[in-house]
Image (cartoon, rainbow, N blue to C red; front, side, top):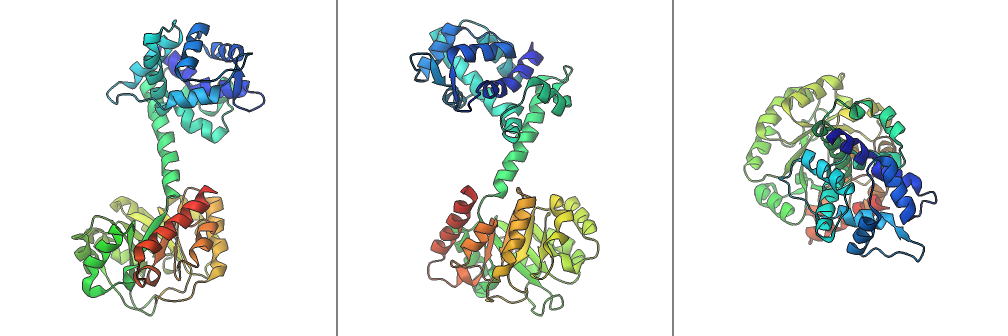
Amino acid sequence: MEAFAAKNSIILIAHLKMADKEGKGLMTEDVFLQTVATVGPKFNREALKKVLDEHKIARSPDGVFSYETLMDQITHGSCPETVDNDKRLAEILKLLTSKLDRSQIPAFRVAMASLQLTEPAQGILKKTGGSMSAEDFQKRFPEAWKSSRTVSELLQDAKKNLDKASEEKKAMTPIICPSVLSSDFARLAEECKRMIELGADWLHMDVMDGHFVPNLTIGAPVIKSLRKHTKSCLDCHLMVSNPAQWIDDFKKAGADTFCFHLEAVEEPDKLLDKLDKLGLKAGIALKPDTPVDAVFPYCKRLHHVLIMTVEPGFGGQSFMWWTMPKVAAIRAKFPGLNIQVDGGVKTHTIDACSKAGANVIVSGSGIFGKAKPGDVIKAMKDSVSAYQAS
């Protein structure tokens, strides 16, 4: 019974979309009932009318209604988190195969809401355009189709799909990172706290050794001191000749991310292995002249890629507009990856970064050097959001 409910619920929405030949989101009551019947459960006509009435779904004289509106309203119900998933699906099947009276409609709405929030259909159908038959599902996802699998196992698969989709969505979220290199170091903790209160997301730490780049800045001791004053992400960009020797120190100091330059290492995978082992989020940075495809082999292992839009080493340089195609190339090939830009990013250059596909924005003097840094942070977030939505 449970396996039957799980399998048929998985493909219910897909069948409805397939039956909608014109793709307008409209359907007659007859077609709706016939479609649900082909999936398995028999949906009572009187029960359907009551559900349509309950959700105030308008019907034409010949019975045409927006099944998409119906499903959307049903999915916005709420369901207690304490209810077991197997019981939810069993209840859905029971309600679909029974004659619903008025007292059962709220239970139907709650059950359907829980289904929409937990089923693999949501993660899978979004990736297939909403058109997948039972045969397609069985062929493309054989493990999830096996009758020996329990509903709980199916829901675990669902969670993996939804978590992945959620991570991809998070990767497109605007993340503003003031570079503390431009702050007043005599008041570093206070300055960082102020940035977070004004809406910044991460604190960008530029680490330079005087060898890989000509400048000399901060190291792990500063990270350790700052960690005591903030729970925000300490985003560490290491412009150093031998990043591997600093991984342990930065982990102990409390760094959240560890971004090294591809140009500084011969075997990036070894560094990535160690970062994975220590639980540090890994990033790889590219100088302006480094070909973008050099980072492609490692992107699936990365938390973010950093595209330098100035030559690394000193703040306050002019933005290099010609680096934007590199950002666009990464976004096209890895749509769910965080892409960070650093160097000369200010209010008059942010739109170019956003349009190319960057979502993690590093800015030093462009934020710290302004009278109203909060307004700059908001403007940068708005720019990224606007282009991500377009």
